Length: 456
Image 1 (cartoon, rainbow, N blue to C red):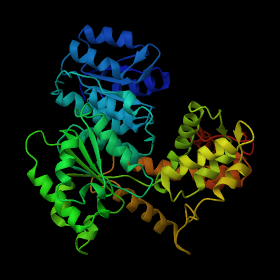
Image 2 (tube, one colour; image 1 turned 180 degrees about the vertical axis):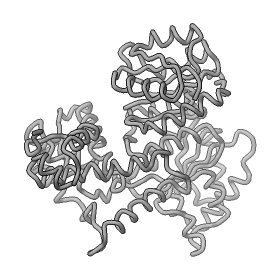
Image 3 (spheres, rainbow, N blue to C red; image 1 turned 30 degrees about the vertical axis):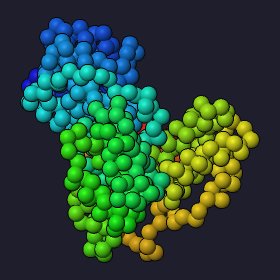
């Protein structure tokens, strides 16, 4: 890699790590904790690539992208952010960032993206007439730091301004309608209508015409299209074929995959191929358990804004909601959090209160349950195949090896520490690693030290 890279991040550790890695790769590096300094370097003509955080002491990194583009057209900017929501991914795409990576990022992956950005340097962003209306979706509960959700955010950001039809699939309560709404609200059609179509709108032959009149070049959402009967499906096919200029964007949601019902005669093949220009599979909560505490916190804060009072989950309560399978997905989690806000006796929600609420929820399989007698390798394989399947035929984000190791290593060390009463010497002996190595892993993996896990 050959070039000069400008880094803006208020975290000194990240600046140091990136500076050392990029310098070893052959680059010249200028690092700062100030956007003012970054803009001075850009305006002076320094740098072949910018790597910038979003939330900085003196401003917002994404909001600087238009200024960077104006001062240095074609200068690529990679945005890194701990604000791992769909909003960040969409805003970075709207601002014409070269790439976006959530924190914590995989260093080898970032290095590859940086090398590719320096090598190409061909993107010259066109000026945009309007900024995205962040207020329209600022409260979307599309929160997730897991790789599956980050991949989903990137896919939404890539397709939102295309004319391709979008099919959003997923279990009930995963947020399919929110994804559909986000695609419209952050696209260049956001000032036009968003028409939600149900089976009742397609009962009569003139129903599709009325739908087109409502949409007026905006977006049409066929909600739960898999539930429509054959007559309604036929009317949609004729409507889609008859659309002329200024046609609306077509989005559909479905609990199951309509493609699996084609052979059974439950879904028209010609309609499927008209709807599935791009398929977005929304993962259920049980395969992105690391997002559950963040979603719970999000819903508690929303309840506080609604005037229901401040509430926080105790550590044990957080562990309990993380271990639950949530068959109703995000919708069920939101309802449970609102019940807890109302029924909690104090500001901190304890395990007894969580147990009282979850005891009345629908029964669910244990989150980590597998076949009786199943070997560990078989269980790991099953989960990995499901993770790959969630990406809808596309490859997961790069850096998978290190992410999987981290997913396995963290609970292994936590359970071993619990089993040895927090004695690090015994824990290191149990794991078969050096005690100093264990200390370093506890720090690197950000393993929380509780009363049972006291550093020796």
